[in-house]
Length: 101
Image 1: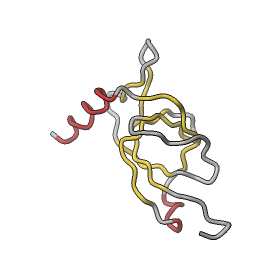
Image 2: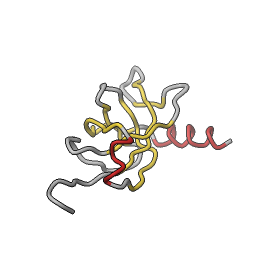
Image 3: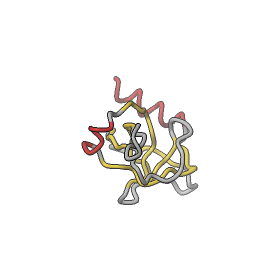
Image 4: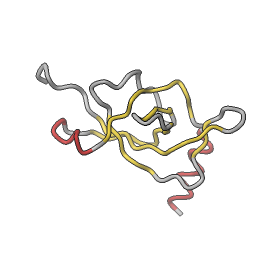
């Protein structure tokens, strides 16, 4: 990797919102979208269900990851930063199951 290249990866995510207790839950009519890790992305990915913030401040939970060629990085919006927030894994599984059925 040259000095100008940096790691890239596609992040498939689902818009989430917080309930009154502060728990992250998938939005009622959420659809999966794709972002990418960018040169200036802050923080670190730890596990599926982790919440990140988009450049517009929207909270999104990771449901999948995939490789991304460096020369295709401009096809996707970069995510702004990782958070320590986590979606309840049961709620995430329920959303994934509902989309398969």
